[in-house]
Amino acid sequence: MNRFTTWTQTVIARTRGAHRDAGAGFVEYAGLMIIIAGIFTLIDSLGLDGLISQAILNAVNDVIGG
Image (tube, one colour):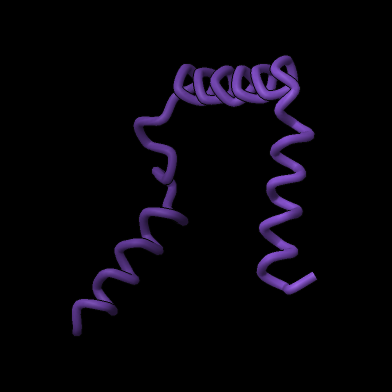
């Protein structure tokens, strides 16, 4: 077996196995959700949502030549 096949089998076993979330508990998931909510709240409260949207639109237009 080559290294790629071994690696692929290992990754599949870890992502589809019965213990795919081993070590990740409710506290970790809740903490992640709190951080994400905080980032969205910060972006909205600082009024950066329009600025970010415009920057993304400009970048897309630069790529597609629009």
